[in-house]
Amino acid sequence: MTSQQKHLSSERILSIPKVDIDDLECSICRGLLWKPVACQSCETSFCSTCINQWLIDHPKHCPNRCETYIERKCPPFIAKLLAQLNMKCFYQSHGCDQVTSYEEIDKHEIECGFQPRQCSGCKSEILEKNFDNHMGTCPLIDLKCQTCKLIFKRADFNQKHTEIICLKEQIRLLQNESKEYKHEIHELNLQLDEMRIIHPKIPIIKITFNDLQGGADSVYCIPVQYRELTWTEIKKHTIILLFGKPQFILLHWKDIDKITFESSGGTAHPGSDSGLGSQVILTQITIDTFE
Ligand SMILES: [Zn+2]
Ligand SMILES: [Zn+2]
Ligand SMILES: [Zn+2]
Ligand SMILES: [Zn+2]
Ligand SMILES: [Zn+2]
Image (tube, rainbow, N blue to C red):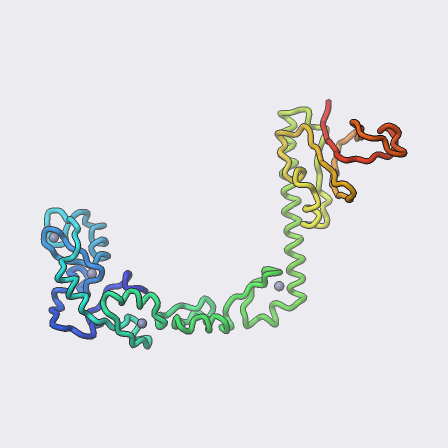
């Protein structure tokens, strides 16, 4: 809790050097003025949060029944009196003995090491200054294995996250991932079915990656253009092959009557007999649909 959110109790004033505390009281919350503003007509000062809250319920009305509430800065003598105050820290009851000037109190309380924070594990209130230490040792904190994504309490590490459990979890994750890919392929095929209705040329080709046993790894071997094919545009796809390197291109299609390798220029190689033999060297493959 910072000073912006609470009402300042005048009991927290340490020294009152010739100050009439009544002048510094907010007429709404009866606490010490905090970040005060004033009504232009009656010059009464209010905490800015108090008056803003009031104006939500009573738009444009001053709590002192002035005709229209117009906000102005709080009168200089009030600001001057407030500046003279020395305040005890809000967290004094938690052990903070810091005394701060009125103007510095907000800054201190934001950083005060004695403000309590709740531990997400054991739910107990821990002082800010001890918080990091506590988080590093609290047995009820949830830990997450970055490899298998399993979440377990620190105290359960030895029972709930053994090496075997971690490996089993990893397998389960991979199986799920593979299921997701299969689903994606299924969706693609459905999309393709729809496209067939609009473009009757398409029925020649049906892509199925249904036998995808290896899960994620195999999927990455499939060239991007086949994984994310935009079926509305299917007409012609050219793959440039890498020179001197084996490449895995999964073209596991159904309903194909014939595949023809056709040479289009280049040098004839031994056994390829002008590009019409049984052996060819390909530098590029074009997959095309035709009627
Ligand atoms: Zn107030
Ligand atoms: Zn007024
Ligand atoms: Zn403090
Ligand atoms: Zn804890
Ligand atoms: Zn793990």
